[in-house]
Image (cartoon, rainbow, N blue to C red):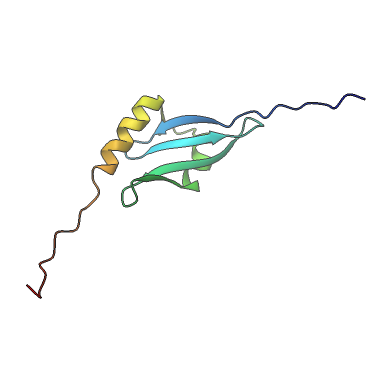
Length: 94
């Protein structure tokens, strides 16, 4: 008897912009959105932000713009550049 081979379909990303935040939405194996991520200024990384999950799947208001991966990455870079740096504190022992 021959074993049935299954293929694992990779998750796919789609990119959105709401005028403030770039949003990366993940489509699962069934084709539905299963998660959303937005850039975090403090960590400089994408963070899970499920606030946008329903919006990307059901945006009847037209508030979200579909963007390309390159546009998404450029917007993330701009957000990461806003990270506040702590000023050097003088060493009181000196």
